[in-house]
Length: 395
Image: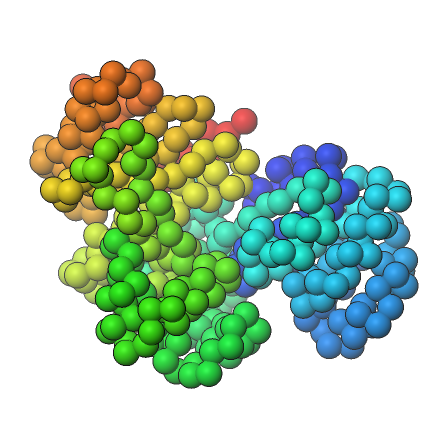
């Protein structure tokens, strides 16, 4: 098993919380991480119908069988057990005894937030970060990194990314979507996923998305919520604090894995990536994902935004930490152009005009151009150097 960077954080949480909640997309390696971190713990999966029935019929007895530590997989299948778990935790006050995993966003689950408030430490595990598989990725180019994606199964078995992603989409639509929402037309929902992929990296326009499929806007909103709850997509909010009416305040839509997004776009051959019209958006999505994984893996107190003004100038990513904003621009091209720095200069001028220069860090431009170096006050970085560094810059 390749070591996950989140493992140290999971151990740290186990020393301060009686319950650990490990969530993330299906097949992101949650169970493997939990078992590798706590090999002495018992393991049960509520995905198994007979196990789930026993847990629901006798939750006290179910929990009593595992008083030396247990990993309970797919806990969202039997949320009623959590109320009994709360009583057990409050009575015994033993740290790190229960590890709960789920492929639904349990951070948003009312059952978890009500039953385990103050008792649970949370960790979101996404597919591999580049620095976790750097030894493998050195022999693969940007096209393979983006188009194939980062799900662990693609690195531990002899399966093509096309076959695996196709099966992933089918099982996701047929199982998770049915359980998360009352979607009557699963084929229409799958078309919705493809339409969302075609809008990757764009400002989210639910009206337009709904109209293009001939569905109600409320339906589009509900379906997007399903994609977010199951870690398929996410929204990147705009940063607009104190910048007035000139700033766009609509979020942008991204996918947690660019391999899945590429597959939904029909882009399965890395050789086609260089000329694909979504190349820039997918490159941007891939890099923003890496910064999100970094924050989750190490528990960094960082928030991510983008900035865009009414004239269309845009900084792809603003990482805010401890009150300082770090602007990052992504360009998929392999030949540096000074014009690429224009959005960064516009954002800096706006911040400085408000007397907030001390609240911004140095700008970074990440591209496919070879080499990494400082150019005046800007860091010009090759994409591979930028994402590899994220694995080294941690507490």
